[in-house]
Length: 77
Image 1 (cartoon, rainbow, N blue to C red):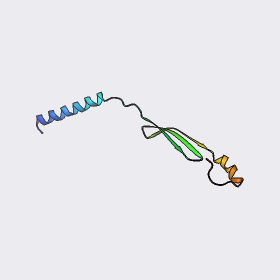
Image 2 (image 1 turned 180 degrees about the vertical axis):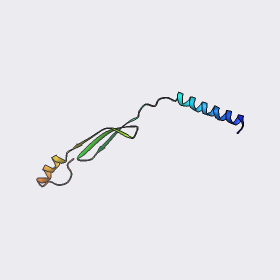
Image 3 (image 1 turned 30 degrees about the vertical axis):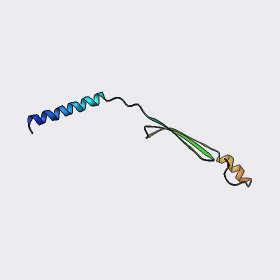
Image 4 (image 1 turned 180 degrees about the horizontal axis):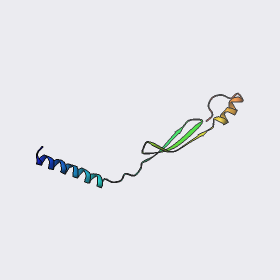
């Protein structure tokens, strides 16, 4: 390896290190996910597509079971 090649490699390394130092700090991205059906609704907040920060499920299944016991069938929107 010649000195010229080594110098070019070192320059590239220094340039890469400088770019990393100057790289902007990325703020987290939050996603609000909502899913609904006729008897349940759920909501989640996800950070950067990987970390679940919150997850809540609201269900009417218990209410609907009382109607099913009475003989009513089908969905109850």
